[in-house]
Length: 296
Image (cartoon, rainbow, N blue to C red; front, side):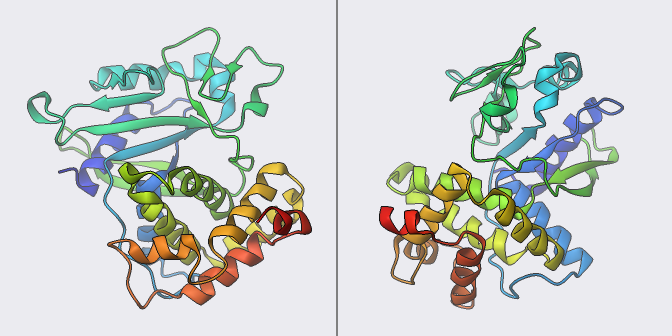
C-alpha cells in the first residue's frame, strides 16, 4: 500500500532530479489536498471552516506544468530525463503524460502513478505546441506531453509556494519548493471531475471528488478567499466558469441534491462537517445566473 511518505519521497526524487532548472511543479489531486491541509495545520492560519475530513488515500501524483515549459521544450527536458532515470514507464494509451513506477518486484501493488497536466488548450494558440482535447504535444518532442485542462483557466493565479521536506528514495534528507493551486482553480477542476464521475461505479460515483470539493473549501485561508472572490469577478463571463456555476446549482444546492448525497456517502464523511456553510460558500464563489438557472 502506498503511504503519504512514499508519495513524498517519489516527489522529492523528481524535484532532486530537476534542481537548478526552470521546472517548477504545481501539485494537484489528492496529494495536493493533503499538502494544503498539512500546511494550514502547521501554520495555524485561520480557514473558512473549523471541521475538515481526514485526507483520503491516493497513489497518484498530479503534476501541473506551466504552459511555458511545453512551449520552450529545452526547459522541459530535465523533467523527462528524471522520470526516465527514476524507472517510470508510460501508461498504455496515455503514453508521455501518464507514467507508472511499479512496486517491489515489479508488482502493481505499491506502484506510484504520475499524471502530467497543464492549462487550457487556448494557452498554446500561435505556438509550436499541438494541443487537442487529450494532450499538448511539445515540438520538438522531449518525451513528455501533458493533458490539457480547459477549466484551469486561472492555473497560474495565486499559487501557494510551500517547502516540501522528507527523504529521497536513497534515504537522504532533502527539501524543495512546490506550488499548490489557488482554491478557485482547484474547485473548478474538482467540480468538472465530479461531473465526469458521478455515474461511474469504478470511481465511487464521484464520492471522493465531492469530499475533495469540501476539503478544498474548508482549508481555504482568508487571504485565499479574498483572492478567489476577485477571480470570480474577473472571470464570471467565461464559459467554463458559467458551467461551474451550473454544476454547483445542479448538484450542491441542498442537502438532498446529488453532490451533497455523494459527499455524505464517502467513507471519510463525518457528521461534524459544516455542510450548510459549505453550500453557502460554493454559491457565493460560483453564483447562479439566469442562464445557469435555465439550464438546471
